[in-house]
Image (cartoon, rainbow over all chains, first blue to last red; front, side, top):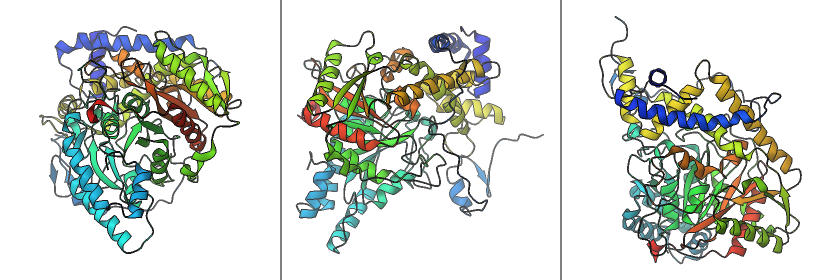
Length: 95
Length: 488
């Protein structure tokens, strides 16, 4: 499937990645080539095949709902680009 | 001390031929001398020497040796290491210092290992050349005869592979999502093992594609791969996909030989444009195993051709989801902007390189409304067919023999402008990844240009023992003892 500039713009917005306007054509070409190639999968009849979502198929383990780690906000925040008190700080999102 | 492997170090330390500190100092000096390989992102000399001193103290106190006591190991910079920066070779994590240790590296530390350096990789492990690294490409210690051009070490675990091949360290950790341990091992003339999915904990490894990622060893011998895997493996409650399987003595399996084993040779791996000498090496590999007593069986793996396109839907889809966490809020790069939405988009633009952006965009597209079933669900259905091909093959054979990569190491910079040409590097490694199977690459010979070529053995789930047994037989028959230009 050939992607147009508008589609590339829409995907980039969904992915939260800035794409410069002058990059959109080249990117549309690259992504279209990759999608065209993966579409060879349409040659395979998968009508009666269930999707494989994980390897091994073992049941996900359960554990009791108890706090077993934490209590060190300083270490959690040590890599934060911006922090205020015991919180991560971001630009204002609510007026 | 340069050529000592893990088994040699174990013996040398036990005999008192050298101390762990002497060995660590010698290898740390070698690391400093290997700068031309650009294989190291962050050296860890203080931590290494402290671990070596602890190993010597244990020996002096008469304590029994730990499984990796005093053994230097390099670590792909995708494993989080406490208080040592962990970058995934990305601008996004250039200054990230984890407050915790990954389970696999914690297991190695508990086993007495001397972690010596964090190694270069393709950004977020996405690539087959280590050239998408934010820190520049790692360099293969091998060169073609009469050709001065530097070669790619493969990827994404290219820094780890280059250091082991150049005999700077005896062993290194890698991770493999679609071939990122096995392909660099083949390009660099060393052994690289991807264990069964679930064999080693993924906890604390920067995630790329969670249903595929698996940690494994890169070493110069099959025995050393068995030794390192034994210390890495084991159930971990912190990784919900970690398997509750006992960890066997992998090293004990090596002496078994291949007499009576049935080895499958899949006709679909004979792809168009495959170099004749690679095809010849593959036939020779089968003949070696046959001479050692194995039975060679021609097998079909009919959906092989569709593994790579299925992988390039599943892996980017999972990557787009996993990499959503890099938003400039909790850790990693932040590019400030007036609104939080703008800040996300600018941060991710500045922090991700071209290949990572490409894969996140592809993944976002195949998971988006209206396309999910046509791409993502379709790929998951094909993935099941590929896994089923192997299940049926393993009713008839004990292991499968294939080439590891379709070519030898290419010159640095090649294939960078053609994503699909780069993706084709993984054509032989991706099927076992999709099926979650253990697979190893063994150096089997040199091509006409003097570059190493590898053969791959694939086994049943959690049957690394048979894979290693067959690999040991292949290793013995191949007698690969060539050394790269870098150390000659």
